[in-house]
Length: 416
Image 1 (cartoon, helix red, strand yellow):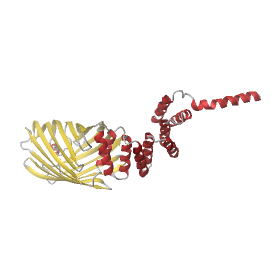
Image 2 (cartoon, one colour; image 1 turned 90 degrees about the vertical axis):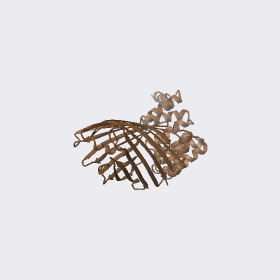
Image 3 (cartoon, one colour; image 1 turned 45 degrees about the vertical axis):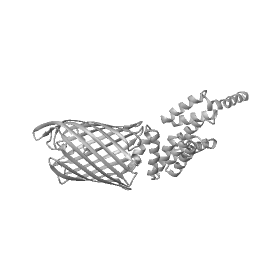
Image 4 (cartoon, one colour; image 1 turned 120 degrees about the vertical axis):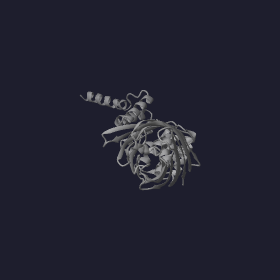
């Protein structure tokens, strides 16, 4: 009896180590399997497999960094930091610095996040990931100018870095406290209307803590040989770390060429994979309300940005709908402020101020193509322009007027 018990205990003892290192004939394959577990939210399986690998190869840094991340995702913060600091106690390791910079920022320890990003860059000065972590920490510390300049330098070297460009675009909205903008649009119609149209917009933007960017705009227009003006205000309040809103309200005493009232709202959300989406509405009041529902999905890919925006227009108390669709792409060059653009559109956008008067008239069809270019000079000066050709059919009175519209727009922005 004792002999059987002794043999059983011996077998159990011999089996302990195989239980810890079983199926680890190839540690690299096991690491890939652990990564799969981690990124499919199978945290217990990932942790168990990482521990088994580390029994066999305790200095496998990639595995220990992965284990630290899994601990963090599983709310085991102390264990996460222990594993990552264990890696750094043996040697400088880029992925460990990256992970620590992330975790410190996610736990709102922005100074510590900045410390690990800088420390990592002292060993790995060419690490684009650590540059981005440094910029994110600076942005969280409200040092946006420093963060933007770091990203701008990175994009000069690597125009195809999606994450850097998306972050730079986000920071750009809060980069300066004041922006002064001036633009001019000219429309020439081949058939629909007998006169050329002119639109001048002057706006002042002020960055505030409570409401984000607040924009005051005056639009002057000459349409149907009639001058008029429109007064507007936009706001872009932040509603979370990855969300902000667009709010708009406007009034015009010249209802023959502008809507008497306009309003709008959209909620923007940054998404994984360099995507961004929004959903909202616009309201134009020309004696009766025209309600438009709109949204978009955008994607950064290398040094391109793509956006698709459908808009649905409600007529007759929302019993009749028609739609417009716009596909826009930008090709970025030296910075987040420098790009070429191309837009293809069916229908009319309520955000195109040179065209909003046309919502007074039911349209038959409308196609448009727009080419644009924007460039910056010493960060604070932005110059832009575009040319557009659209083919439109409108019922002006009871008669269908069909023809081309040629639009030229130029503009300037000054940040200060």
